[in-house]
Image: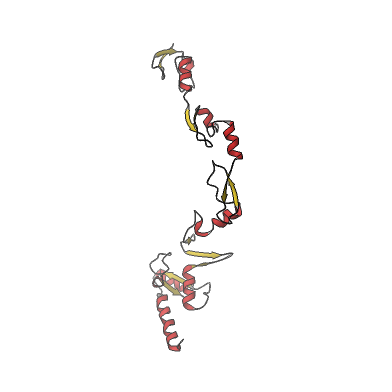
Length: 216
């Protein structure tokens, strides 16, 4: 039994057999309406000459729509403007459709993207345990332990602990750091059975007094 439908192009009613509707998202009443529906073109602009032109959506989905003709396509790939590398200053050739080129080689690009210039650069490096650390080549160190070593004037042993008083492991100001000579003393303090450690601020004041007494 035929099924009544409405043409999406001319809005006229028409009937089709049920078999015509299987697996079809859109159906029209005639070949003219079909051509009208699928002849809609998209406005494009040539990357080389700037001329406006139209193409079917299917051509754009397959990678077209960049150039108005093969002449412009060939000219864009062979014509280039001179530009200077931002790192070494060497001249480089830049196509008009790709003006964002800034470096002459991957080596120069790597030099320019180091440190703070890198788009993913983070001012602070945070470990998986929440401590701020830094590294140079194969050597790395935690900031809170480095501060303690500078105050104490020596390198900390592996069993010596620097505790954060307020619990914020990123707060490495001297007033927030406390020294424990052993791991067990630190664990006892956390369990409520041990004595608190030595604040680094008191140790720093003690070092200042020692320097004043010696006259250094």
